[in-house]
Length: 131
Image 1 (cartoon, rainbow, N blue to C red):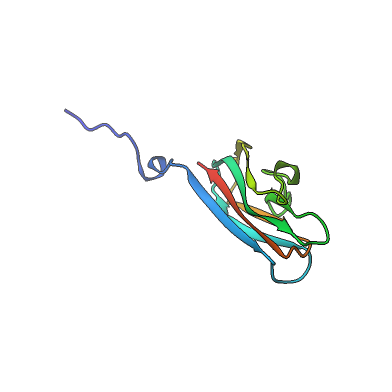
Image 2 (cartoon, rainbow, N blue to C red):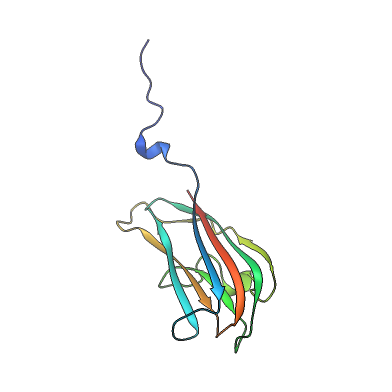
């Protein structure tokens, strides 16, 4: 009998992985927005889902809070401000099915942007699942 190769180190690492970010208001720092580098997706990786769970509604800001998930150059590429409602507790999900081209030489940096406008209360968890 002979051996048959069924996987190697790279191909065996296909289980879904999740990037997670938790934000609680009031948010420190300057300005009305907070950008957070959630992590990187390798070339050939596919972003399957983005979920935003609002545990506690965001209140007390000069405008309604918005949460976006994307890249530094396109803040809402994967999950836009109309895909969730930070003013209302609940769970919101999108399925962008975005593939970072395998021809790219750099990893894709995934960012969560919270436009909090000085909110005094609120808590949310953002999750990005990719393979």
